[in-house]
Length: 555
Image (cartoon, rainbow, N blue to C red; front, side):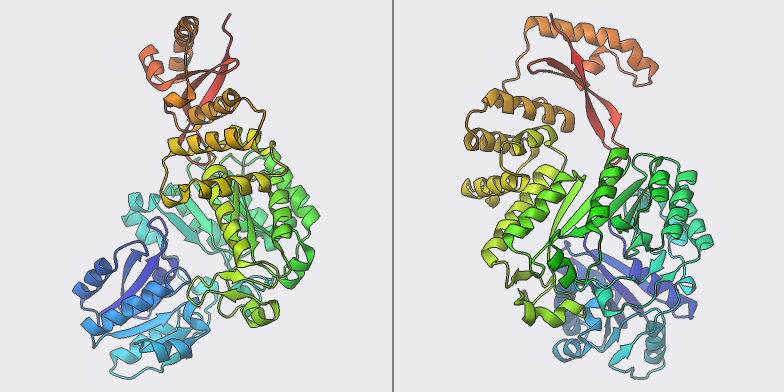
C-alpha cells in the first residue's frame, strides 16, 4: 500500500513539521509512508501531476487556515483522476467541523485533533482491507514520545535546510485562553519536552548551522525558569550563525531574564510579542490577560539593549475597538519602535471561543479561509479597508527598514504616526499606485512626491537628502537623477583622498579593498554636510550587507 502524506506550505522557506512527525510515527509502527511537500503558490496542475505520477493508494492531507481552500480543490480533482484512492484529512481546519467536511467533500475519513497515533491505526485498517470510521478523534501523545524528525533530514540535506525556517516544538499547549486563538478550545496543561532532550536537539541545529529555528511554543516564557535555561544554553553554545525566534509574553519578563538577555549576541534571538490592543475592554472581551504597563516597559528595555529584534503584533477587528481606538493602539505601539510592527486582522478560527460569540459582537466574516472579519459592531468595512491600506504602507516603508531616516522626519510632520500612514495610504490610492508592483527606487520617489505635496513649508531638498541617505544605506545604489546628487570638484578630490587614507585600514581589517574597490562599493553623498558611505558591515539580524556612513569635512 502506497501512502503519501501531503503538506501544502505557505512558502518555500517553510517546513512541514506536522507531516514529518506523522511520517516518523507511522514508520515507528511499521507502516511505510512518504512525504510530498508543495507550496500554496505553486500551480495546481503541477501538484496534480506530481501526485498522480506516484499512483498512491492513500492520500493524507494536513489542513491549516492557509491551505484548506486549495486542499478542497485538489481532492475534488484527485477523486476524478484516481477514483480508487483513499483520502484522509486532518489538522485544525477539519477538527472542529468534521461532519461538514465529510458531507460536502470526497473524503474517506477525517481525523479530529492530534493524529500521531490515530493515523497509524487508520492506515493499518485500510491495509488489512477494512473500512475505517469516517470521523476519528485522535489522542495526543506525550511530547517526549514524539520523534525528533530533523536529524535524518539535516544529515542528508544540510544545504537545503539551511535555506529554510526550521520549526521546533519544545512545549505544547498554553496556560492562557485568548478567545481568538485555538488554545481557547483546549486550555489544558502545558506539556513540556524534557530540557535534556531540548538541549540535545538545539545543539544539533547549532552544529548544522541552521539559518533560523522558530519555536512554535504558544507562550515560550510562561515558565520563566525554563525559558531562561534555554536562552542560557543557546547563548553559551552560540556559533554566530543561527537565529532563534520565540513568541513570548512580554509582560512576563522579569529582572533576571532581562539581565540574561542583555548579553545575547545581536541577531541570536528574535521575539514576537502580541500586544493586540491597548483598549482594556477589548482585552477583557478577548480573555487576554496582560499587564500593559509592564509590557511596554519591558519592550523599551529590550530595545535599549540593541541586540534583539522585536516584532509587535496588533489585531484589527477585536470586540469594542473602534477605528479611533485602534488608532491609539497603533500610535502607542509605534512609539515603542519595534523592528516590525505587524498589523493583523481578526480571523474567526473554527473551534475558538470567539467563534461562539460572533453574533453577540456583530462580527461578520468571510465564509472561506482565512475567515477574516469584514466588520463588527464597532468598526465598519470601510474602516477595515482603510486599515488594510495602512498595513500595506507600514509593510513597504516601516517593516522593510528601507526609509528609516525619511520616516522619522516625515512622521513628525503629522499629528501622529497613524496620521502619517493614513495620509500616505490615501495618497497612494488616489495616485493609482495600488494597481501595480513597485521596485525600491519607485518607492523612494513616491514617498518624496507624497511628502513634498502633503506638507507645506518643508524644503524639497531636505526631503531628498533624507531619502538619499536611506537609499545609500539600504540599497547600495547610486541615487537616480531626480535626487540631484551632484559632487563638486573639491568633493570628488576629497573623496579620493579619503579612500587613500582608508585603504590601509580596510586591508588590515581584511575588507581587501583597494581604491578601485572603494570607487565601486563606496558612495559619496553631499547633504548639508558630506557623508561617505561604504559597505562591508553584515547586518546581524538579516545577514545582508548594510551601508555605513562616516562624516567627511570638506573645507
